[in-house]
Length: 166
Image 1 (cartoon, helix red, strand yellow):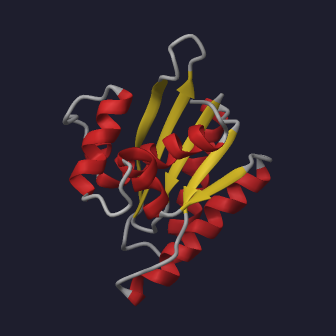
Image 2 (cartoon, rainbow, N blue to C red):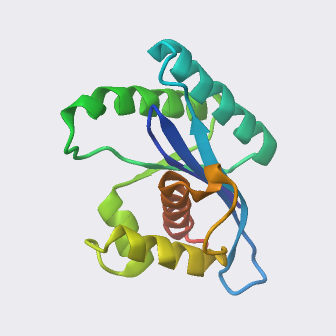
């Protein structure tokens, strides 16, 4: 089973694609991860269109069985709520167009699944994700170094747990 994890945003959408391999005692293989980055100089509609098009390309390439998305439940900065909500709407629409079931997880649920502690520090969560998936500490590719990409992998891991793959 292939799961694509998504960390929504308007400036950056983190994505992580993992495949559960049955003969590896619950291990998952990272197929791809990175960020869809939009140009802040473009109108919002064009940025949302880019998110849709790039996500659609990822779906066509990897053919995920499930999409796991970070849910928006709390924001410190009210200015970011609307753009991130718009991006999430486009992400959900893209999944619906491709008939991919969507699972949603809060950051707290993701932290619990990865570290066993819902208030774990971001660095601790990232370190555990890299450990669980056998990733190198730092990639030279800027798009793969982004926190959003690592968070998306964490959300994808939550999807493997929810779908009883681990």
